[in-house]
Every structure is written in C-alpha cells, then in structure tokens.
Image 1 (cartoon, rainbow, N blue to C red):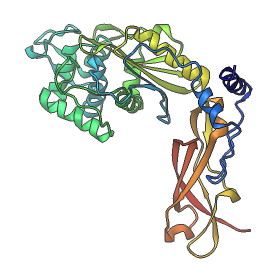
Image 2 (image 1 turned 180 degrees about the vertical axis):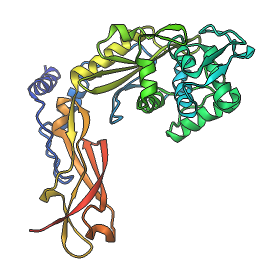
Image 3 (image 1 turned 135 degrees about the vertical axis):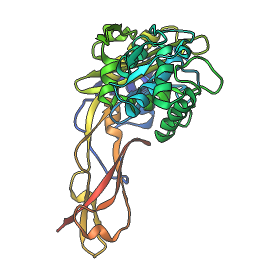
Image 4 (image 1 turned 120 degrees about the vertical axis):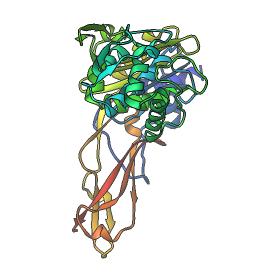
Length: 367
C-alpha cells in the first residue's frame, strides 16, 4: 500500500495539469508545483512499446527529443542512407540534368530498372531512389554528381560532418551492408530534420505516386497511406540492419520525426511514437519578453532589458510546464549601450534539461 499511494498521487497530479501558457521564472526561483518524486513518476507513465533496437521521436522544428531508445548507438542503416544521397544530389545537381546510365549501375538489391545506355533526368533518378529505393539509381546519381562513387561518398561524409553527426560514416551511396557504413537513430533524425527543410526533398519523399520522365513511381513507404499527416521519409532493409523506417508526420503545422531501426514492426513502432508525440505534447511559444525580471546593468552605468525575437514553439508535455524556467546568460560587451545589440543568450529548461537556446538582445530600460 505504501508503494501504490505515491504513484497514485503522481498519476492524479498528471491528470489535473492543464495546458496553460508557460510561466517563465528566473533561475534562482524555479518554483515547481510538483515534487521531484511526482515528476519522476509522471515522466515514466505509459512509455510506448517499441520493438526496434534503436528508436527516437523528435520535434522537427526545435530538434527536441521526446523519446529515445539506444538513440546514439552506431548501427547499420540500410537504405535510409539514401536520405543523404538525395539531399547531396539535390544541393549539388540540377533536377533537369540528363544522366547517362552506365553498365556499372547494376548492383544487387532493390532497383528502379535502369537500362545501361539509356539517359534519364536527375529528377527521375531521385524518385527512383526514394520511391523504389533503387540501388542502381544511387550509383547513377553518385557517378553523375560526384564524378565517381568514391568522390560522391566523400561528399556524403562531408555533409554529415557539416551537420555535426558524430556517429555517422558512409561507405556507399545506397546502404548495402559494408564495413565502415553506419549511423545512429539520433544522427539520422538530425539529418532528416535538415533534409525536410529542403522543399524539393520534402516533395519527393511526401509524394505517394507520381509519373516522371515517362515512369510511374509508387512510394514504398506505406505509412503515407496508413497515418494521418504522414509526409515522408524512407524505408530500409538489409540482413544486418533489419527493417527500418524514418518517418515524418505533420499535424496542425507541427512536424514530428519518428525513427524505428532494426524492428520487427517498423510501421507499428513509428505509429506508436507519432501517437505519443501528437497525443501527449502541445507546442508552446517560448520567448523572453521585455520585463523587469530580465533587466541588467549596461556598460554605461544605465539599465537595459534582455529580450528574444519572435516566438519559438517547443513541444511540451503537461507535466513539464510547471518545471519550465529560463536562465539568462550575459556576454559582457561595450555594445550593450546600443539598443538591439546582442546581450547574450536565453536558455529555456524543463527541470535540468535544456529545451531551447535563443540569442538575447538589449533595449534601454528606464525606471
């Protein structure tokens, strides 16, 4: 009975919390309405039953991770590799490029059916890459955009490096199992956040069926038909990587990314993760308003207020809102005497977890 009562109280507290506007306090007075014991209890309620060996759920706009399982483990990623193949090709090539098909594009695994000696547009290859998961399309793209497969793979790794992906290395453009070819659920999520910001990439992976260059492509990502708001991204399967899915869904203008890597039920896992995000989180605007709580002395002896520009939406669960607080980090500068100058950064926390960091600016303040 002693063990049941605290958990019951925590559950009751979770049900009684509403979705009111976040109350930002200073770092000195966090003033949580919940005890640490209640917070730990609520945070562990009803976790999704994910079968994947590695998985992650994230808010695409802020990058905030809402759920993770072995998210930083280096794993084989199969054809989800083609996410980086596609975004590098889009950024470095032209959709209208005429690409000659060479004999060496014929490789094992899935294919879009390229005929050596034919010519297709880069756009057609991209649909074959992302809809049919064509390994032949990956090789043709690599040779055209990079000059050779090896040079293109170097471009893929350079893109990973520029995005800060620390647990990622590519050895080929298609994702067939190979030594030195790996990533992690977290890195793939960050890569997908970046790629979905490109309208051409988002259009290709979000299209269910299309006819391009005289060919009709049907997207192999079944989630596009099965889940309301699904708009991407890529499936993958090899003996070593198992079955994987990088999924995207948007509702009410808010996008979530769900990754299920090496799963016996990748679509079920992705659905459970996306449901967790859309059913348990609300997007709240975070900002640092011009008020006396954010005042600080300027370099000229007068006072200024720190503020952030615009409103930035972050997914928060109801139980997290009472724990939301901010910390203002000031950067000493003579420019503080000028309105609009950079004052430092505003850090927004849920408990001890950083959820958002924004540049803070200065404005004159008179008593």
